[in-house]
Length: 80
Image 1 (cartoon, rainbow, N blue to C red):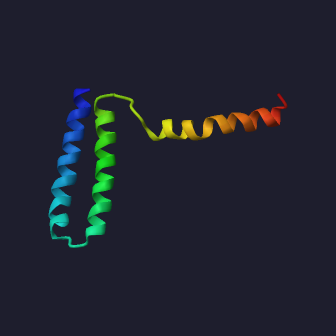
Image 2 (cartoon, rainbow, N blue to C red):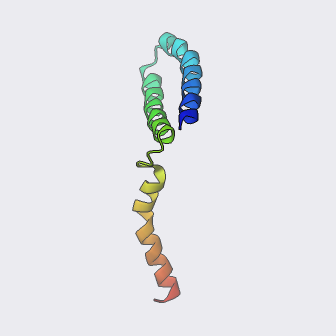
């Protein structure tokens, strides 16, 4: 776990050291909002990865939405 955290710290320092000066100069509020939206998602997934939390991911969302209908379709074609 410690090696993952060190890796994430290095990656985030490099990303933010490059992007913050660009974002400060940027005047378009819409672009900043989209960037910070992606940033929040990336931080959430980084924390999930770094601490091995296995909290809500896209896999869980897709399973919730599509697992039951997929099982119905399989049952229909199998004739059960």
